[in-house]
Image 1 (cartoon, rainbow, N blue to C red):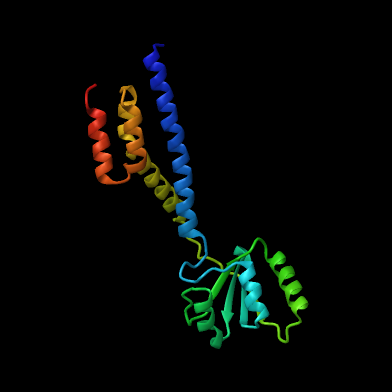
Image 2: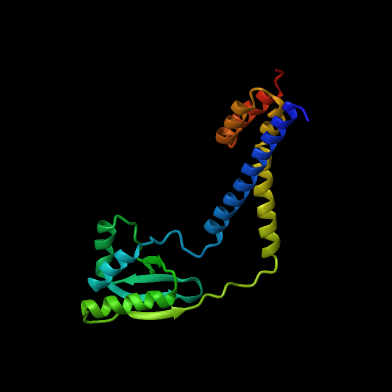
Length: 199
């Protein structure tokens, strides 16, 4: 194997490694964003903010989404505007007003009871455990497969200029251009034209 072939092999291995990493990361991020049950129009808060609101007795109702470890909070009507300004969040007047992700429901309940007992609050907010059963869709696995396939093919297609230029001396420049600007149409076209250029 010649030195040029060794360099070409190393370059292809590097591209494949980056491709696999991008396919996994981008597909994972896409599915978390699209299918994770956090409602994107409802502001999400931390445990510390939750405890503060609880101590102020501004929580009217707590709905625990058991099967997804998500807590929905309904505030007292007169406190919505207060927390919109204080937390700088866009809180809707419709229930639920806030949401919070928890590790487990049991851990949340233990922390809740501990905070409630420590602060000696007058009234405990209503707590409901709800379970959302998503409708069964026999086509979902097929939809998932095609979504993964399309995203993966787009990522591979993006790196065509890098694959073409593995034998070229200006491979590094094309690869950097391809990696950072290949997702723009102009960047990809420039990288492709450059990769087809003779030494």
